[in-house]
Every structure is written in structure tokens, then in C-alpha cells.
Image (cartoon, rainbow, N blue to C red; front, side, top):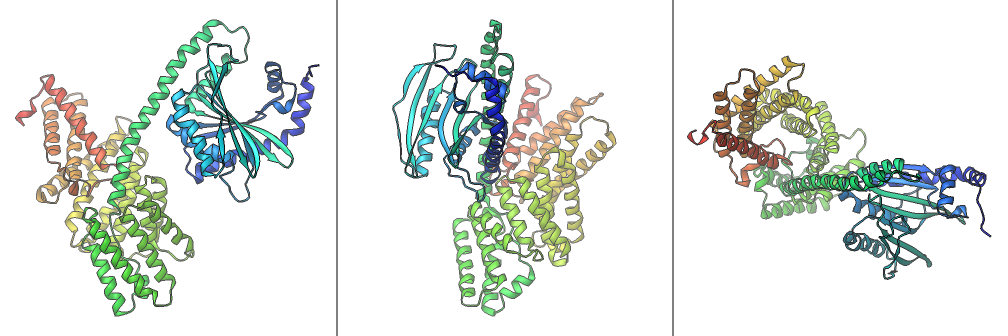
Length: 619
């Protein structure tokens, strides 16, 4: 005899377990969110919900369920990614979480992973990525698992033309056997999703949990489909037909988003590689109290002088060859060995560790450098202010593309230096403020005014203390003028033709002033001018060209003269890598910026010439 579950039975069950369900949802959502923060898992957002009695009641009817414990999604979580590329790393993280590999003190939960359902994925993706990742995670946890051969059965959906591929993974944890059912099927709604079904073990009870993983765009599609067609009777056939047609567009849009992400990843991967290979831009002396205590004998002072000279005489990233790095390591070891025969002090340990991290940075080992810097900061007292560590950690984070975190460290560095301000610290304050200006610029248009304010502080500091910047004063001034011109030019572009035209006029005038200063300075120092200097000059002329064309009484000839100047300046860009990045507004983005600027300028020149408006070959 079939047991019929009444609505009142479901309400009673729901109310009796509601607090348990809420706690499971809250705890699991917290563990998943922690993965985003602690392990940098690229998930965008999580949403948790408890199934309502009404929804459960319909499910018992639809699925012929006669035991409420067979409802596996009383607790449901939605995990969303922005891009398709993020699905696999999040999928791997959830596998590890539900197999108990991610543990946090005080937050450990024990799950048993029972089922994974793959909806509307290609067979190639399933076989080449999703199934192998399961095997990989089991191997990582030293869990022996066997996978049954895939079998097929007809789909129980309304579209009987599709088949469900099913296999079972047999595994043991703590000598207890478990079985993981893996299903792959095509559904007529056609949006892609991955569903994990697990049970939380709480004493002798097992509480069911379902986690759905998909992209944000797929989720929007799913919500719309759920609202218009799911669980609805007598749906007009055109709705089903329209969903099928729109599914094709959805797939194309999701793929386009992934394509844009791929383009971005290609650019940033080159930038990250360049930043890793380039290493830190500057080497600075430690605070005098550190050096005075650590290097207190003639032998140590002599070794430190050799060490400092090695950096200061080659304070150019492109001069740091493998042989240069080997010598730096050897000099560092000599000092550490000399310090080892003496009682260790807080400052001697600090110096040895921080310089070890700096050498890791020079060698391109950013994670090792960041780890050592972070460790040193955690060991310092609140009153023990070491600006060097904040600056260097900021550089590492910036090279890793972690702009916001780098900003925090550079801010702390600047605050400490402001309290220690003296003539010996002028160069250090210059570096810190320059970096802050660069970081604000990297954050985008909303921060460009702040970047300008900061670079103006650098300008004031530089011209008030020019003697402090010998022997490389000219290089510093050229870099400063380059950034002043570029930041003002960027600010001018963000203002557009809005209400604040007085500000736009002032910013444009400042950009022109620094353009002329940079142009004249570069003309006088051609042997040391780099690619970024000519790029800034070319980009200013190109923006001036576009500004003239946008005027009511435009002067085409004047505009074409500016475009011709832009062409001349990009023709002077030295592609020699030794000069292409020094003095640039950003080591992470200067190469790509220059390439895009050249492309935009040359495309515009080609368009003007094809229209017969101007012949730039005569210029």
C-alpha cells in the first residue's frame, strides 16, 4: 500500500527540523565563503534557502516520494561564478569541501558526498575535466576509489530523445564504504549546472544538503525559466519553443563573456610574468637604528657596505642578471653567517629575514617573499614601525595584481615615514608617494584625481630637495614629468563634456603644461629617454587630435598635425626591453598600454589616409 504524505505531515516535519536546517545552511555557506577569502576560490556569490512546505508538497507529488527523508534538497545553496572559466576551480573546491579536505579550527563539519549531477555539459568537458577532477581529488586525499563503467538509460524528462549517462564511484573514508553517483544528462531548459548532493553527519543523523554550481548568467536564465515554465501546467508551446531558441543566445553570451575573460587573462598573464621577472623597482636602506645595531663591527660594516653597493650600483631591474642575483645571495649569506656566531637580536633576525624576502622577490619568487614579509609584520610590536617591510610587501602584492592590498601597505608605509620625516628619508618618502600615486591610478577613473593629488605631492617634494636625488636626479625628474603628464591626461579624459567645464579646462591646461615640460626634457636627454616617455607624448598628441575634431569650429589641419606628431613619437619608441619599462606609469600595464596606444594611433592614421583626408607620409 502506497503511503500518502499529507501537507500537514510536511509542515510538522519542516517545523521540527527548521533550526537544524538553518544551522546547516548558515555553517555551510560560511565555509564556502571562507574558501573565497582564505583560498581565493573564484566564486562570486552564494545564496542559501530552506525548502518551503509548499514546495516540498509539490515535490512529493511530482516525484512520487513517500518518505520525507528522501527529499535531498531541504537545505539548498546556490554557488555562482562570473565566468565559465571559474567553474572548474570552484568545482574542485566543493569536491574537497564535501570530502572533508578543507578544515578550519572550530568550524569543521563532516559531510558524505553522495551524488553529483551534471546538466547540459558537453561529453568532452565531462570526460576531460569533470570526471578526472574527481579522481584527482580522491588521490590528493589518499582515498582509494574505483569508478564503474558508464551506463546509459533513457531520460525521465519530457524530452525522451536524450539519455542519462550514469556511473558510480566507490570509495572509503575511515574504513567506511561510500558510493558517489555521477550523472550526466541533457535537460530541455538547456542551461548548464552542477548539483552536489551530500549529507551532513550529525551524531547518528544524516541531514541532506544540495549545492548548485553555475555561472551568474546561467542562474538568471534558470530563475526566468523557473518562473515562466517550471512546475507549470498547460504552458503555451511557444514558451517552450522560445526557451529553446533563447537558450542558444544565452550559450553564445556566456561564451562571449568567457572569451572576454580569456583576452583579459592573456594580457594579465604576460603582465604578471613581466612583473615577476622584473622584481622590485628600488632597493632602500633600512632605518638607521636597525643598521646601527646590526652592523656594529668593522667586519660587519664592511660586509654591509659591499651589500648596499651591489644594489645601489645596479639599481635597475634590467641589470639584475642571474650572475647579479647569485652575487647578492652570496653577500647576504656572508652577513648571515657572520651574524650567526653572535647572540641573535630582534633587529639582526629582522634584517636577515627581510633581505632574504627581498632576494626572493628579485628571483621572481613572489609567494615566498610575501610569506616572509607577512611573517615579519606579524612579529612586530604595535609600536615597532618598520616602513621598509610595508613598502616591499606592497610592491610584491602590486606585482601579483592585488592592487587593493598593496594600497593598504603603501598607505601604512607613507604614514610611518611622515612621522619619521627628515632629510635622510626624502628619497624614501618620494618612493612611497610615487607608488601610492601609481596604485591609485591603477584603481581606475574614480581614483585618478587622488592619483594626481599624490603625484603633485611628489613633485613638491622633489623640487624642494633636488640634491637628495643625486646621482640619478635626471632620471627621477623624467619619470616624474612622465607621470604628471599622463595622470593629468587620464583625468582630462574622464571628465568628458559634463557640467564641470572649468575643472576640465584647468586639468587640460595642466596636461599641456607637463606635456611641454616632458617633451623638452626628453629632447635634452635622448640617450636616457625610454619607451614610456615617447608613449606618453604620443598619447597626449592623439588625445589632442580627438579633442580638436570634437570642437564646433574644428580645424582639421591642426588636428592632423597632432596626429602626425603622435606618429613621430611612437616611431621613437625603443623596443629594447632594457629601456621599455623604466619610468613607466605601471610595470604591470605599461607594455599592454603602449601596444594599445600604438594600435589606436596607427588605425586612425590608416583610416584618415584611406579617406584621402591627409597624407602622413609627407610629415
